[in-house]
Structure formats: C-alpha cells, structure tokens
Image (cartoon, rainbow, N blue to C red; front, side, top):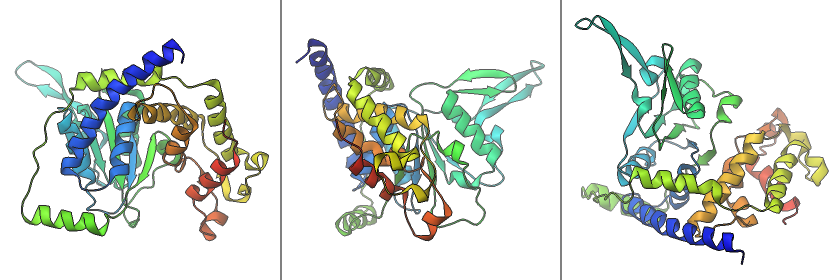
Length: 328
C-alpha cells in the first residue's frame, strides 16, 4: 500500500475511534434513529448543514442538543414563526446612553449548534438571513461583519404534513443544505424503551467526549482523505445522469425538471470522505458514494408535475441512476 495512504489510514483510524465514542455517548440518550445520528456526524465532519423532514415528537431537538453537550459547544433552538425578523437571528445595534454610542448585540446565530425548528414557517427574508450565514459563515450587522466560530452546525426542520401558514423554501436555498434527511417513526421495540425511560423520568447523564478544538481538527483532516480520479469521475457521472438521464440509459427523463447542481458533486465527495473516516479508512471507495448519495441528491433533483401525478419520488430516480451508472 502507498505510504501516504497508510498514513491517512492511521489518522482516519484514530479519528474513527474518537467519533465512535461520540456516537456511543449520543446513543446513551437517543433511542434508535441510528442512521440519522451517523448522518449528523458525517455532516458535522464535512462542515455541512442538514435539512431534516419529519413529524413533530421524533427527538430532533434532543439529538442536536445532545451532540452539542458531548462536544461542550453552545446550543440554541430557534422556533421559526411568521412574525420573526432577520435581526432576531443575526443581531442588531443598540444605543448605549451611558457611552453615547452604539454597541453590537449579537443574535442566536452565533452559537455553535443551531436547531432551526420549522424553518418553513418564517418569511423568506428570515430564511435567507439564516441560509446566507450558513453559506458564508459570517454575519453582517448594520455594515459590520462578524465571523461565526467553528464548529458551526445548523439543523433545520420542517413538517411534511402541514402547509398552511408556511413559506416554501426556494430550491436555490434548499441547495445550500448538504443533506436532506427523512426521519421516520421509531420501531415498536424502540418505542417501548422510550415509554419506559421517560415515564420513569430516567435521564442518562451525558459526558463531554470531545472538545470543539478536537472536532475542528477532524473537520480539517476530512478533505485530506484520498479520493482517486476514478471516484471523482464516478461522482461526476452520477450527477450528470440527473441532468442527462438518457445518456446513461436511465428511463426517467420525463420526470426530471432540473438535475442536481455542481454543489451535489462537491458534497458527494466530502460526505463520502467523512463516511470513509467513520469506517476508519483514509481513502474513498464507491460504497461510500452510494451510502451518502440519497441524502445529498434527493433535494437537488427537481421533479415535474408528471412525476407528482404518478407518485415518482427522487429516491426512486436515484436508485435507477445508481443501478445504471457504471461503478469503477
């Protein structure tokens, strides 16, 4: 094996052990939802953000808060409502009578972990303020720019069954989320454990497993994981198949309005690297790409009316693409 790959494997294995401890500590409090927890870790390592879709009461807030506690980071839950203003998130300037000058009052966006609950209930101007901060990792308050401290991780939620009083996120804004995750109901056995734990007021103690400095170190290592040119070509072909499905013999052309943007290619590679790291490897294999493809692509493939009528989903199209695009 190449010496550089060997060194990457050693570092990846070391960080994988640390992340396994973090995962285990989160699971001490969260019952079930193993895939969601793993994908939260992948997004955190990749410095991405998550759009989480699911009905209320599935521990979305608890998952994000628990991860923040394990890393000794600040956590803020923002309840998005129709009367929210951008300044309520980013902050504002206030006049100090004693000093006869303006001072900056920073908003909740300056926390490390942010849960943007029901993001589609806030007006577009407020959504835009949050999404710009996610993209630029800085906030402008009345002409003055402030950097957001790392780690900076946003998990936005939306309820799929309610549309009244909501503002649909524009496709260009949704594209800024690394992952779109679908959170499902717990299994029957998990639900029994939830009932037993919470009706007896059992609250597992959460220990600090990693520091924010350590998670930043892991984030900085992630781009260094090796991805061969063949892997990059594989990713480019998968994304291209969402735009030109007929070129790959994928029979879905009549359902796709727009294919995935170049952001999809970038996040596929970064997410696959994080997936490899969790597995203790310093290099990416095609299985890493397949493991993250649905979460990266499902909100980037825009379907037309015909697909909606025939109940064709983006996940079904991704399955066809992965089956047709040749694996290196």
